[in-house]
Image 1: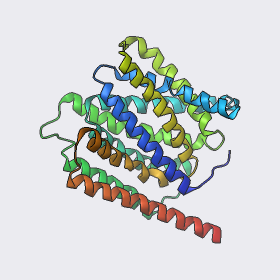
Image 2: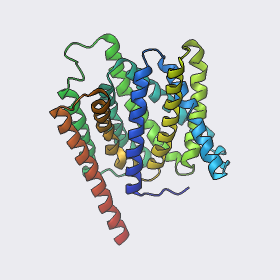
Image 3: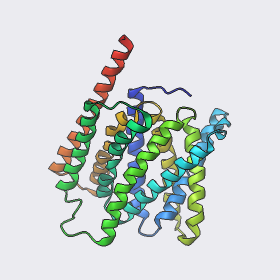
Image 4: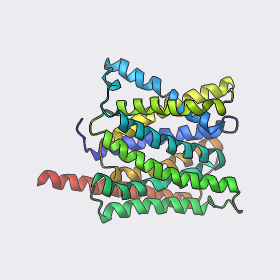
Length: 302
């Protein structure tokens, strides 16, 4: 399957995926007091499967089940499980905004790893834009005292912070594996095998952490899986559409969605630091888009 290399399409898909993942994280945070994060991981993967099968049925195309790169899918599912485990654990012990902020080491790791792994040429402009976006994250986090909370963090909070940062590294490796798989596999094939394998991985551990959910919690758990499945397809399509290092800044919009959810649902108005950081994030994304469009025009003209 040839790569599309369409930065506009990739950016739009990334924005949509990021919004859905933020909603999913908010739901996870809401039920994590009663449901273990391993059980949350199982539902996240298991109930993404109906989304995949619905797409196959609608297209009357079950060829997405076929693959000649099963080993690559297993590795991708393993790194995805590690990233998801770190992320979900961090969500259970940290505030949503803090967990989101700490997880944004991913674009930096992706940019660094894409050079030796994918052979991408990352110039000073994209380096600057990614770093600018990360500065925006730090402005928000430090301005809100996200890393201290007004007091020395507890041991479990420190572990949560470390897990959130490590999640960034695992996510970066997963992103590069998805990019490699996208050269020969469709997005639905990648997400289908991810869901099947990650469901199997978490199912092995599930009996040790199972808590019977209430009806409301069960509905929310199913919703987590459905939203996650749709978001994962959009994310995979995004990475099949443009260079991963070019899409990094767009994932920063999760902060904007976190602010919006907090404002509308919890009546938490954004502070000046949040506004300033968000402005840096938006500028970095727009500048990346500008550079990619300029490079595309130059390639076509030559």
